[in-house]
Length: 363
Image 1 (cartoon, rainbow, N blue to C red):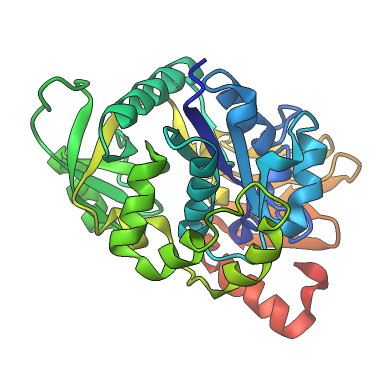
Image 2 (image 1 turned 180 degrees about the horizontal axis):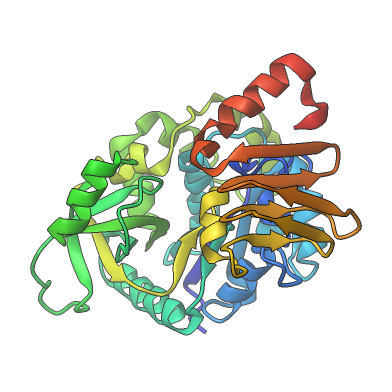
């Protein structure tokens, strides 16, 4: 494998939209959410073992999840777990990882990916990533993967590309024109009809140098925090510096911070069975259904006149559901959720209300 190629897996989120299955003490990336016997993080890590050397796989996570990461991936060296002292969204953690790896290898190229996505066609995925990493070694461009949309989904961001192949490059590579955050249904349908919009996968590829230069140009305040640590990366002094300096960085996503501002952004048009497991609805789409379109997890569930529900309950509990249509029913630890599927966008507000009214015990 190419020693200049690295993977960074982002595993610091709390997955509030998957409450109550995803909890503060055990977020969704650490759960066997699909019933495969492996957590989403473990599946993502194993996916990248086919692409880069295992010593070149890094995981960024909240310091509170460090033990969970090492428990789930015992072969990982502690130096490959990049701990964030506080959650600051994706831009600071990517800047941190890029600087840390650049200090080890100035010729490094990176693929940066979330820990909680489904990839059904893993061989095709590996080929796309390898092609993108090779392109990143030749050009100081910023690459992302765009997914061919199959429906007008309002839960995804969209990437508009400029038609026309790039000379000497992959036939699937296009220049990015615009990014659009989650649109309404009418706009999502127009994106689908136009043929030049893709779902934003949130997977990025670039050289360390290219992304560090982009931070310097578009986010100098963030760049300053991590540039000042030059000389202490991968030493005993790194954590002492970051435990204070990281908290001063602003909280912003990589899309807003860099991708929507930069001019050298390109997208690989991709189709490898991708799903962003961000919501109960996205999980419903990929789970096996019964004859009444119910997606059920739990060995002792009895359903009567119930249709198009997603039900996630413990195996040891008997659960009887009668007369519901298009509901989410999730029972986990000390919390039970019963919610219309159409109203699941309210979950973040619900979780905030629980924090205010009942405290952190149930979150």
